[in-house]
Length: 376
Ligand SMILES: *Cc1c(COP(=O)(O)O)cnc(C)c1O
Image 1 (cartoon, protein in one colour):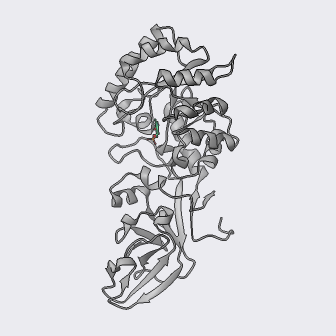
Image 2 (cartoon, protein in one colour):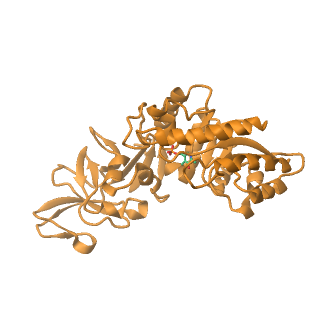
Image 3 (tube, rainbow, N blue to C red):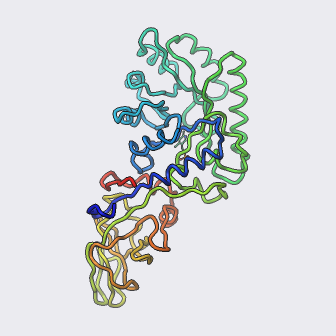
């Protein structure tokens, strides 16, 4: 990396850290639980295809995405492992699930009929059935599952491979709401088993439900769907998460220009910052056109020479200006860290989330494709 010419701004994706996080999750769930990590939304901004290849090389059994297109893109990149589509599939596109061997979750008889019709004679398409145990998005209500499972007998080209649910509040210290959801799931599972149907995969846990110590591994079943934790970020700040996670993503840029401005100089659009005294500032070529939020205007900080430097004035589409009055010898081309470590200092995705009033998930997921990703 250091020998390559570096662009104005870029991401470094640390595959070693990714694999360490996967290994830490593996130690938590043990050898008998399959890892189906989640690479939706371009692997939370980290780059879906390289991340997917790394995860599968590390022994993960398969992958999860939200959308059909995301699954198709992984197939077109040569990925052959099982891929579960967690979200909605437009009915008129359901046959693509067969064509690309993507595993859909089926919510309705109409969807089941369309998928059955799209499956060639003599073959079976595996489906998963989701139970809505309390999130109120997708899935069948607990009472609807058994009749639905019985209805699936009409469709001999479909096989029920998975039964699953998703938790609403597993990132909170109090396990009670999640335990209630798990009890609903267990009840449904018992009825499905009593019907003689034994789905191969039972999965209820994203990162928080995998790791939350208060749940004592009760949500693991035989497969888990970790997302944020594989990227080295915590599902929330409220719980003492039991494993060390190493952030995978570092966001860097370079100093474009250093300027000495006299007192009383307005900086950037709208003149929202006026220098209170003579000041040295650096222009950094990164902005909201890269996914660096405009809401960090006059609020965010970056690292230069291991020192925190605050953003002065508005974040523009392609540039920010930062205060370097307290940092010596800054030159054009110097490294700037927006998220990550530099020297002894660090700015985390959680720091940005805190300044922005959001969560780390949104911070990394909104980094745009314009920013080149380097895999190290
Ligand atoms: C996004 C998602 C996950 C992963 O969640 P994390 O909190 O990032 O671990 C798992 N399951 C479903 C259904 C999801 O939508």
